[in-house]
Length: 453
Ligand SMILES: *Cc1c(COP(=O)(O)O)cnc(C)c1O
Image (cartoon, rainbow, N blue to C red; front, side):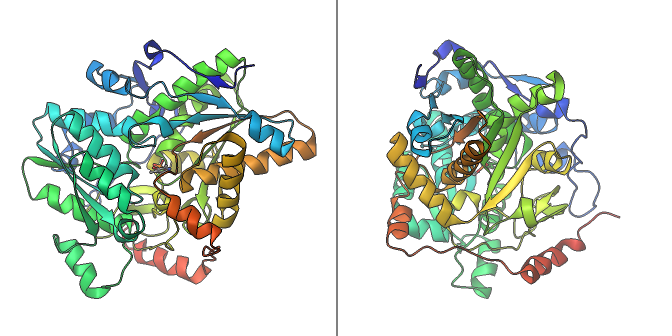
């Protein structure tokens, strides 16, 4: 039995898979925040290039990957899949556990899968500079790398708490040539407004998005780029699942359960959607579990409503599970999971019971991450430990029930730049977080007035 299942560069998918084509209930349209009417391409063109807007609204089942993009994908793709024999042994489980490892990319996570095509379509349309936000720094690093491949400028607004906790992420972005500012900053109207009200704020992805959009709108040669949530981002990530199907075929296996952490939904969608296609069109019966942190529980405790993607309310209104765009989660180390909403596609699929969601506390996740490091030799990003913890739960359940479940999960990034998180965990400085129901209700009340008639 092979422990590691690798593919050739010629196995890099030639198309992205668009789940919209196969969804029983199509996603509701985004709304223009002023008119509350469905937002069209014109609403998006000040911030995104047409090439990406077309993908955002496409209902085509497959979309061709440009050769230039596949050429850059070759730097790290196809990514390896592993059979987690070490973890299986440690857990003494009859379950078969596989993981797809996206940590081999230039930035150490799945994010370059979309950063590269996003930079490419901007470059094609003459854009010189891209602005963006970053939480833990994973997305900023990925976009900085992608921009460097096409000789473009990159301006990153990094959530304050991560800027302070993860200084090396900033240096990585600088190495790829990007400028990095802590958010909220005094460079934008949105940032200044928040600094005035709450000078000590730890920041949030919602605020950083507002800042990056504001900068993009104010310059003709500058566009904005988002690392998750939007349909085209989820689309680009489906190369993960397509490769996984091929790798499991070589192993003679097919998953009963697919697990991934969910911040906005892109790595979860990336590994899940190609398998979910087989549920929808081919009678397969795989379960898909999105794992979120208990401190930011939009899928399990949020409401399915129209909401903004950012704090200042610049983005179109999106129909999604949300905690309210002013929800600022506790300063957990899984920065990539500290987002108030879930992508429209994942939200609709959850609403239709085609995927599942669970919220986990961070101590269980770090414990799982440490166990996984010892068993498999890979130190997971704090976000990825959420998947590992759920895998352990499912593997233990399989043991209790005596069933030989096949579990696949996305190890979406390594934790080498997050060692301060593990340090805090070992020092006993981390705690679990309970959120009072009133706090959630208050935040939701604020967005009730945004709903269409
Ligand atoms: C960004 C990120 C996430 C969360 O974003 P998704 O869009 O939900 O994938 C999770 N893990 C890692 C390592 C990340 O960099």
